[in-house]
Image 1: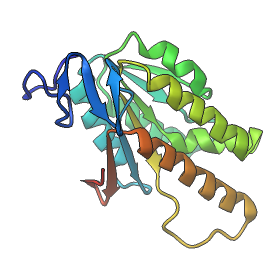
Image 2: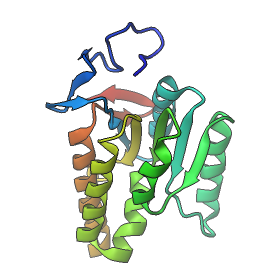
Image 3: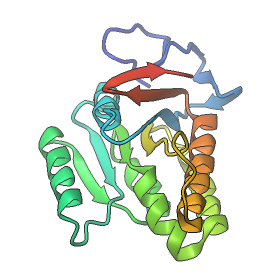
Image 4: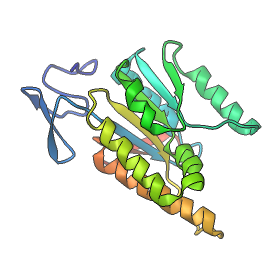
Length: 204
């Protein structure tokens, strides 16, 4: 397992020491695995995607797989945002559209790092088609799979629980479900960064 540029042998990204192929992360020892390297959360236009791209570029260089969860449809604003993201990413990065996260671990093995942007859009599409219980079950299965992989993952999600209580039940269900998804991701992530006004603050 290689260290980041500017670091030294025996130290993994984030400053965690390893010994004889083992490292300590999330309260347990793991044998040659990385799993969730970082979770980046923040509100709309907070800079979370830009921060995630910088982190994953340090991990994987040009060998990064970008997992897009957006379903474009006919939304012109979403299409514009996706186009801007594509322009910002290095040409050598691979891209896969994944409405089903269960297929992502199969793709990860060919890459040095994976960026998934975002959990918010995946949860939105999944939640209203199969319900909260099945959505959380699917996400738990995804985390279990990637936690056994040597490929580092960087996950992006929105923090939607800091505003007023939504007026309708569907919006409240989405807020609560995404909050639980974020908690699950944060629990297994080596690092968690909160983005506000373009500034990333490490909170774990």
